[in-house]
Image (cartoon, rainbow, N blue to C red):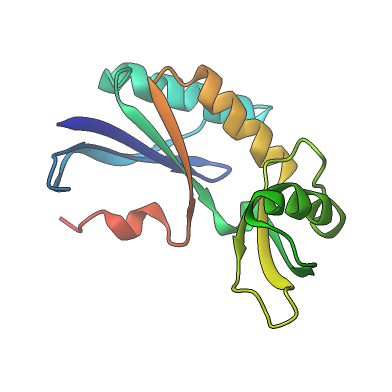
Length: 166
C-alpha cells in the first residue's frame, strides 16, 4: 500500500485527505479535514508552513504529496501551429504560448493538448500554464513540504467533493 497526502487551499483554509491506496486502486481514508491558515502576512509562507505542520502531524514524510491546483490558477490559450513533426511540437508550442498566455515566459512550464492534424498539416493546440505566483508557491511546496514525492494536478472540483459526508 502506498500513502497519499492530497492538499488544496484557498487564502484562509488548507484542505487535505490522507489515504492508503492499494494495487487495485482502492483508497482507505486515514484522515481528512481542513485547518485554518494563520495568515498574518505572506499567504504563500502560511500555506507552506501549514503543509509542513500537516506532514509532521500525520507523519506523512514518506507519502506521495498530490497538490491540487484550482482552475483559476491556470491560464490557457488555444492557437494554431504550422505543420511540424511530433518531436518539434513542444518547442513550437512553448514559443507560441509565451506570446499568447499572459505572464508566461521562456522558463514557464507549458502543458498542451495537440488536436489531430488538419488536411493542410496545421493543428489546433490548447496550451496551459500555472499563473506565475501559483507556480512559485507550488515550487516552494515541492521543495519544502517534506514528502518523498510530489505531483501537481489541476482540480476541476473542490476537494470536499471527494470526501464522503459522515
